[in-house]
Image (cartoon, rainbow, N blue to C red):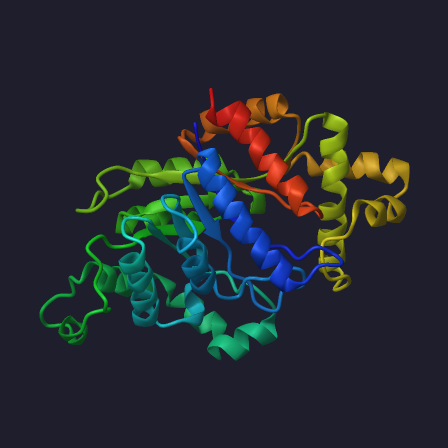
Amino acid sequence: MKLSILDQSPISSGKSAQDALQASMDLAKEGEKLGYIRYWIAEHHNFSGLSCSAPEVMLSYIGANTEKIRLGAGAVLLPHYKPYRVAETYNMLATLFPNRIDLGIGRAPGGSAEASIALSDNYLENVRKVPDYTKQLLHFLHNDFPNDDMFSKIQAAPVPEISPVPWILGTSQKSADLAAELGTAYAFGHFMSDKPGHEIVASYQKSFQPKSLLKTAKTIVAVSVICAETTERAEELALPGILWRKQNAAGEGSGVPTLEEAQSYFSIEEQKQLILEAKRKIMIGTPQEVKKELQRLQEIYHTDEIMIVTITHSYEDRKKSYELLAKHVLST
């Protein structure tokens, strides 16, 4: 089984955005040492408790401080940008860090309605254009517009020797269908979806249309994990994230709360119930327990790579979770 890292760069209560971004750098460096295949960082705008609004900036920083781990956006939110600019940016990264750059493509707003308007005027109209924008972006990356297209006269310079690898990210049938039609790799956000993800991924795998750069379907499934040396400790570490999501949904709070804040907010009975509910979407437990869940998920999705997102208040606890997984999953 291959494992990768999806980082949302969360800001912990009492910490700054600078602290969160530095912790992301440390996580990427540690992930490389531990044997994770790739590190992707998410894009969010005006989103309470998340620090990365410009993945390309962080990828430049991380790329300069790592050597081999693949780096990418999870994802570039295409409705906010022109395809040509995205191609230029990621071609630049691929020139700086050869054969290491992935370009995840998404259509979510990544923040509030006001932030979406500030970024792109008419977000909903641009969402409808995502299939066309994606096709245009792929043409810019591959430098293969038809001769009669006006964009055949320009390049998304600098043109790297090895192009960024495009991935379509999503949680719906629409994203799977688009990835299959265009012959790109597909990453499914299991941790964000209530839909039957294995059926969506299976439809992508069945309908995949091979292109010159990708001959067979390629998938990643992204899951939420909190791993600790004991089940009880993992359940404790999950509580701040549960409270943080509850506060975000209510328009309250800011960074990921401390364990003490979460324990004082919920009664003992509430904590037990919330952990039970959380385990429907989050893998919470010891390395052995999480490994079994990952293997089960791998069999359901028929994927050989799983991407892990972990949110805890303590950056050290987050790093430890990835270390435990690497020791018990990547080493076997």
